[in-house]
Image (cartoon, rainbow over all chains, first blue to last red; front, top):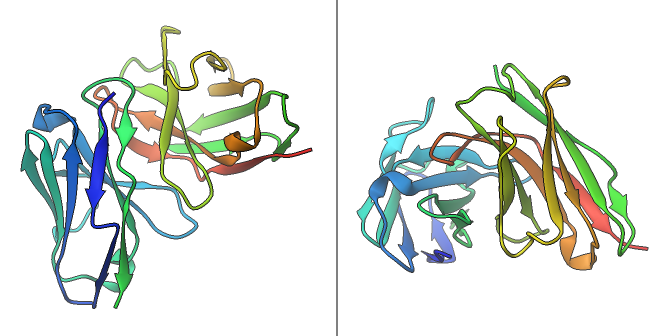
Length: 108
Length: 119
């Protein structure tokens, strides 16, 4: 099973600032197998990024993904009020598909 | 527009069986392009993939739950279902159904349903 470790656990930032979220895997895999989701309070997760850097339909371009091997990053430039949420990475390189434990982006 | 909706009891007794159904609109569960998954989230915690079913009926389950889980397909009603037997309080979670792409990232999710295991 591929374990994903996200850091930091919580990121305290102000609107307009940039956020950098990390996802580290227990083993290396192809970049096509990494996704990011956003979960606002009381809502279902929403797909943001797939294949490490491809934005899902309707996702603003202030969200970007990068990485390779075991280290992946989600960057949110110019935080908007609706971006304060929990973010999860997910690998689909090998079953069972697994998620990181999440990074909460909160208002400072 | 694709929409997924979970339904089922919100309360299950310990040692009982949790049964949920996911109804799909705006698409077909017998499409060969997608996998139909269940994912759960204990209150205040992270996401755990439970398992999926493909239109052929083939399944894959998380080994941590495999001995207790069955996912099935009902193409006539455009639904798929989850059965989880021998439940304990640790199975209390919000349960989501989701559409997995051919690579198994999840592009559509249901709103989720809270299932509490308690006597």
